Length: 371
Ligand SMILES: Cc1cc2nc3c(=O)[nH]c(=O)nc-3n(C[C@H](O)[C@H](O)[C@H](O)COP(=O)(O)OP(=O)(O)OC[C@H]3O[C@@H](n4cnc5c(N)ncnc54)[C@H](O)[C@@H]3O)c2cc1C
Ligand code: FES
Image 1 (cartoon, rainbow, N blue to C red):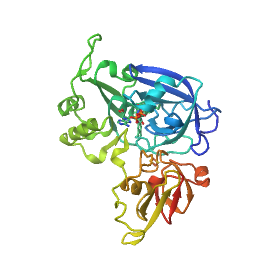
Image 2: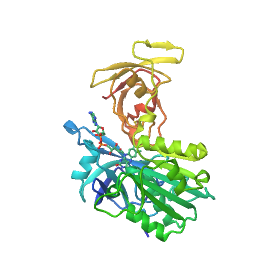
Image 3: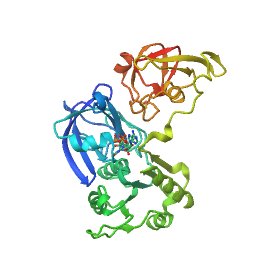
Image 4: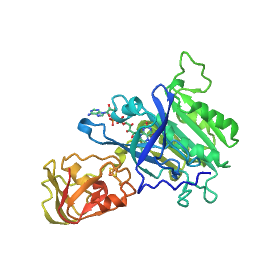
């Protein structure tokens, strides 16, 4: 039994790649250990943010990757990454990350999980009775969070009934298909349906063919209205799934989804620069935000995040989740006061050293950021 200390998002920040496993022609799984023995505790469905100094001039690029592993096997973590055409980080990981190499990581974070928060050592522990049945629906690389949940539920011999519907373009694009079919054979409460838009010429295909639509989904899961639904995939896929569920009378309160781009959470539009003079406004005060390196300045209301005001002013600051989760916008504050309300995207020791997350910080005075 692993009795190593728990990985702490507060003090641990390095992962060592121990294995790279090809999953499909454009998807690889990267397995990680910590440099010193650690046990990883997280909710299935959570993600880590990798920070890699691989941009132009060594610029650090931040990207979130869901943990495809299960916390029921706490010795190691894995992420499963699809190559995005011309994508900087996904292609770098595929082409360069090898066993023995270290990467900087923040997290785990995120709220997309069918597991409730438990105690610190086993936050993934199944609590209470929970729902009686799940429907997991994933498209493409959106399989990772629901795969983690499925692996955990199976490991825990959960008696919750699960239907897992995974859609891909073709059989060659199916991620984790063999493992899912094996788990379904071994686990009486798991049923797997694989759906491909078109079959491969070279391979025999015995799953469902065509685009997932309302009729097919209802054929696969006649009692879907009774199920707790978790969906992850490209935005148009999730929009289509929402439509199918509404058509089937599924209550929206039992629907959860995860997006791999945080566009839907983009900062709210703010008053354009120039429209909000420094000083008092109806919403409260307005402060000046200065960026020391870029030499830019913009106004920010006291009810507005530093990031939202920058977006409104046409000033580019790095950001991803816009909600204080991922750490992408982390910036050193050189002077001024802010009120920050984050969700784990920054460590206490970083806050103590003067770092803030502009996406979830509102100004209490004029502020100078090291940007
Ligand atoms: C919570 C969360 C979980 C995630 N989990 C996973 C996961 O489990 N697996 C996974 O594979 N991904 C996951 N992602 C997505 C991942 O974070 C990255 O977004 C993805 O790998 C693409 O990053 P990239 O650097 O390769 O692409 P980027 O370099 O960010 O490019 C993305 C796209 O934009 C285009 N683009 C980039 N720059 C420009 C430009 N200047 N002009 C025009 N077009 C441009 C690229 O061509 C590409 O199509 C997750 C994201 C989130 C938010
Ligand atoms: S953009 Fe994710 S923490 Fe700020």
